[in-house]
Amino acid sequence: MLIFALLFFLLGVVLFLWATASGKALIALIKKERPKVHEKYFSALNGSYYYWILILSKTEFGRENFSDEILQLRTSVAKKYKASLLCVLIFAMLLLVSTLITSQ
Image (cartoon, rainbow, N blue to C red; front, top):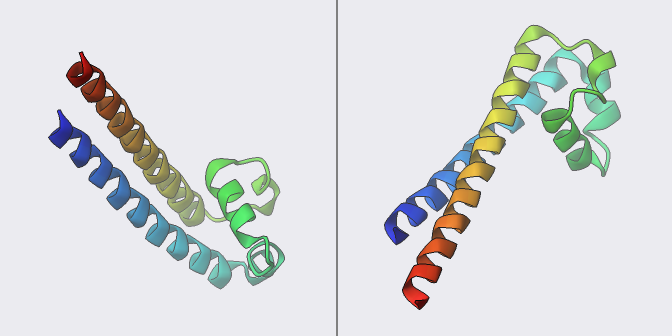
């Protein structure tokens, strides 16, 4: 069970890194297509705050009318982050179950 837990943890880390690289590509695409939006949201000190809003929420950037390519990439990045979180939560649950089994 511990081996499966470690595999889920590693999968979660790899998915997180892949999502982060895809997110950087997303920000670069926004910078290329919409430089004013990039300057407004992502050039400031609070760029990471708006990055997470862009990824996890549709409300803040709904009025910006992004292209379909940006919206598809945003959806893809969001799915990768959610899958990463799910893998890490499964790791934690398997670790907890393993600990409970061995402690009895």
